[in-house]
Image (cartoon, rainbow over all chains, first blue to last red; front, side, top):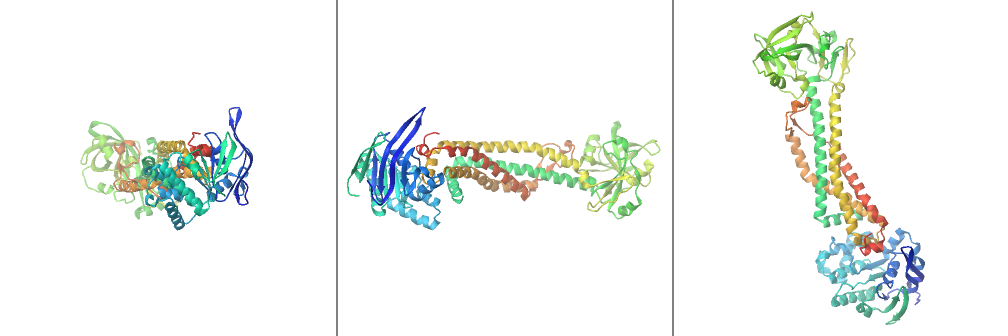
Length: 234
Length: 391
């Protein structure tokens, strides 16, 4: 799908990993584009390459062949510093196991990306409180992750990903550790943020609950795009 | 850097007991190193002050034949006090001593002694010579407490003293122990007996002669005197300097062991952190840190142990060190048995330079020890780190 407001453009992308003396090809000739405000998902079973593709889009990894242009920058050509800058300024990550900083409070976890962006203390405070209000965690501001439930932890992770209002949020199996009620709560929160802030969300998932919320579904199988479907006009 | 410091501080405080155990061990290193170095500085200061007050004053002229380590030189090491020096002596700025070898017979035993003739009215040295200014039926003599203990003499005892005069004739007389003094300078005590200068001059047939001339002030430039050699204060205290230097070298080994123990704890914590906190490392990278910045963060985190240790050390160390400086550290055994200028109670002396050097040394060492294991992060694959996969 090609639109004029593409923020991600992937062309002939391959990713190979060394495996002993041989190579394992995790992604074969991927060609995809994503526009602003999409709520899309990479769907597939374990080993289908969805996390690998998400990592490349998030500039945590580089393609072996082909090109991935994210927000105008070619991932394979970025220096470590440029790559870190892209993640810091424009990307938000949500992980399956939350990846919160255990010894920091909810407030400090959400504040972390803003510290890297050198916001002033008062700016940070306002942005963190806003983000925690979006996810409904204002009363838990002083709690630490071990004191929170799984759903609350993931909401903190969403607040952390959204606090700097990034253009793109990448969520890797965000509901895998959550029960149905919490999963729906999380997904509704993300859907609302997508609608209100026009942030692009890309998921890597095989969870039916997540799939049911997606407006664009890209099915991966053995490292190839197997099928793609839209649930509403984008 | 500011962000790294802020994060490192949060991580350390958040880590709780693990951090504080390391910090307390490291703070012991700070306090003990400063205390031991303070003792050394105090000992150095005290030894030199005592030597100055009791033995060497502001410097001495020695008769050119005089060698304090060779008693056989004593018979030849005397000469008339140079005329220019008499004025200084009469003004109280200098004093003369005549040194003669002798033998003491306490309770029938024979003890080799150095007989020192000293002016009872002198005020250059702290030795209480005024006690020699007394009228008795025997020659009044002063001895140190160590000498009194070894020869089992006490105040008021009579004892026979034998010497050889300038003509080579042996003679003997009874002396009375007019006083026993306590000093931290063994050279003024062990094997020494003090009698009035004029009396010794008469006994040894050496009128107007002296072996050493001691000055009150050290600043003054001394002219060369034929037949005499000038011994400046630094020359006379050189042995103490060398002794302290030797002691300090030995102590450095102790500091190294202390630091090594503390550093081992820091190194261990760093290695364990990198092993256990892989997901966290991956998260830092995902949120916008470069791997080098994460290395920096972990290094700052490790180094901050030293900063917290300095603060913790200050909390209990400052009162402890101040108390020690006031009451001193009393040696568990007799200091006089060491055979060197050493008080029974040593008072540590601390300087800003000592504290600053110690803090700097420990902080730099901690930073290096923290950095070495943290370099591993630079080789980590962030996607594996995010999954917590061991690398």
